Length: 312
Image (cartoon, rainbow, N blue to C red; front, side):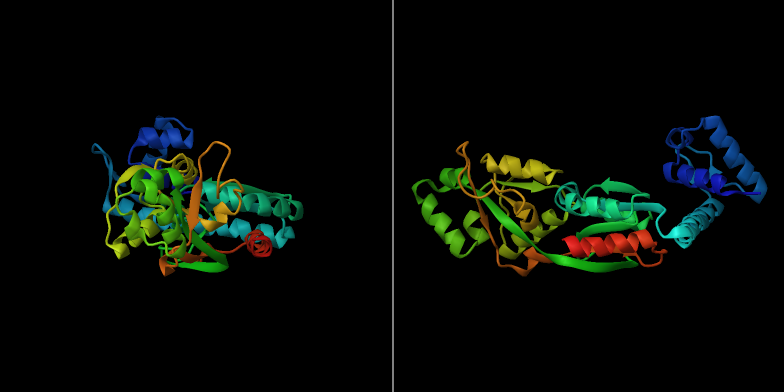
């Protein structure tokens, strides 16, 4: 009889399409994994994998993968629901969000949540927007905290607060690009942060897949400019640090800037940056919590959403 363990092993093997990598991920031997797969093929009377290089799924394997994922999801949801029925406190909650958003939000939320629900096992997954949305879609996290809209299907959202992406312009960039006219340009940008003024200035941006980068690309397209991009990085804090050192202009969420008292204006090291609101609908959005509407929502999950709404 096929059990949940066999199904879990099969799903990992189907995702990796390599028994060696799958076995390593499962912390079992390759021979043990092969035995489990062979047992399943014998049980069903079908071949699940084409033993090619790399492995491929047969049609039967493709159909089983879809069913297996559903069955494992139902199993997890059943355990969560029964735990809630037991005492409304025991369980697990997995949360996905960006590295920097975690730095801002989690210190406000997690201590309060832990005080109320000390027996909930918390899991935090950090990554960019695309990675978090994929994790939510595939059931790897219960909740994702990010900006609307979420670009995957079957997701329900709970709005939390307004958010704005600001333009970050270092004085050093203006001085190098405009010389004696730098102060005049700074005044112009304060009155109207027109990106066309900065069309020839260097920019430092996040890599594709991050919401802030998507906004930047849309702003450039609207302004019909293609400024030089000197660096593309994964971490927005690294981007900001390099920008503040005069390497280029960038974009930074207002929520993050509010938690950095030394960001605006002059600094002791002689570096300073200017923050500008672009007054463009593209840069204004809503921070929200997203969850898969087809999955059971535990009491632990509901309470976390309530606490975020209270604290943020």
